[in-house]
Length: 131
Image 1: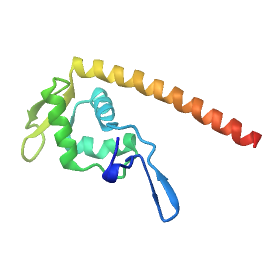
Image 2: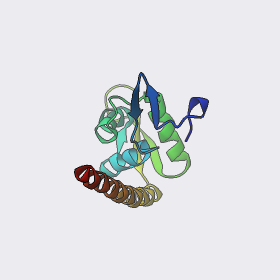
Image 3: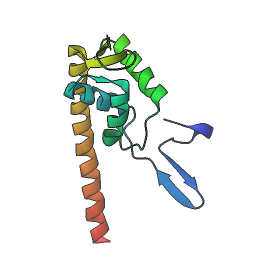
């Protein structure tokens, strides 16, 4: 993918140094599905738990709710109002069967990516030792 000025968004050169973002695009989606597979949750709970999987310091609340709404529109997540807690009612999100199937495809893709990454790193390390 390309960012501003046609440069790849995964890296840029600034001040004589390269900065590389080795990230999986859209990783919030499988991370969110995994958290919901573990247990149904309110948005704030997901907001607190998501960074432990994504490695991001903080997740933007608006982005989280947009993603939840999109996943719900696709039938991957379901929500219902939960008035059992003190205060105003909150939406409680859960993963659907279709969401579980998508999570399984994500796991397959991530395993494949891990294998490619491992091969790359092993080759890099072996070549580094030869030099």
